[in-house]
Length: 354
Image 1 (tube, helix red, strand yellow):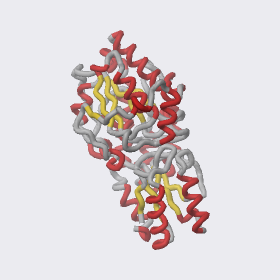
Image 2 (image 1 turned 60 degrees about the vertical axis):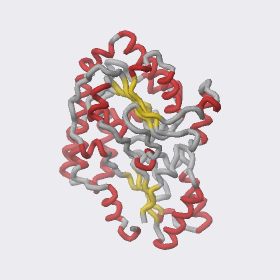
Image 3 (image 1 turned 90 degrees about the vertical axis):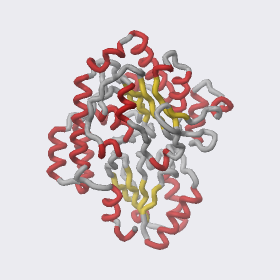
Image 4 (image 1 turned 135 degrees about the horizontal axis):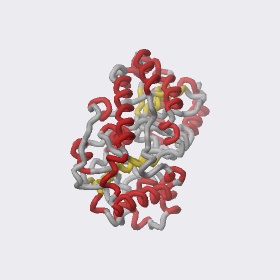
């Protein structure tokens, strides 16, 4: 039996633990094994899931190896639990080839946010008070009055000058379509992305997790690469260095060989150039900052680009890196189109747990 724990697996908290415990216990009693799946890349230890499972195993005297964790986190550390890394193809990558979408100058930047984190809360705050707010095309699909990761809330309140009374006034909103508060369980934000990217010159990308060592090719980073846009990435502190290093990613993807036809992996390994992060325009110094201070740094860079008018030439200056990143998309698509549904792969491997 597969248990999708996306709605339970927070950045540093397990949500609805009683419900999740019941699911796992029922599965173990019926099958003697459980396969836990999440489409979001999370850290097993940082999130508290490791401790949560330890408590269940200790109480019920389970063998930890009978608990399989299928993760989109390519750098998850070894564990007494069975870790199965998997490349979960996002809809944009599997359905859309790379596109050269010209910028029509309507807006300057895009920022599309789902589940609230400290960094994303600060990003919404900075956008709303930004001098060039009217040049942003943004969305935030989380109602903080209903649900929020406690540690993320505390981090935001401690590091920022915001008050809780102000925070709970923040409503979910979207400039690109209807608000979808079920974005966490559905995982993929719905929009006419070709038209969205036609309006913006660059994107501010905020990954779901900024925990140390978490790194994946998510929908969030795939989209600007796919549609030919420069972007600034707020993710874990090692994400940019790992994604930009061809050897690191090629070596890590060896763990995924059973999912792919080997000849396509060989093509990937031979040609993978690494993701480029537009050092000639805004660099990656912001990535050495932490928490909301990194968000402030990103918005300071954005402010300078717009104020000086340099954003109008950003595509010409970033052309080489944009083309490099679209080549990355081509190579990933070649792998994933032969891979098939990740759900089918997991079901086939763990057929006795369906």
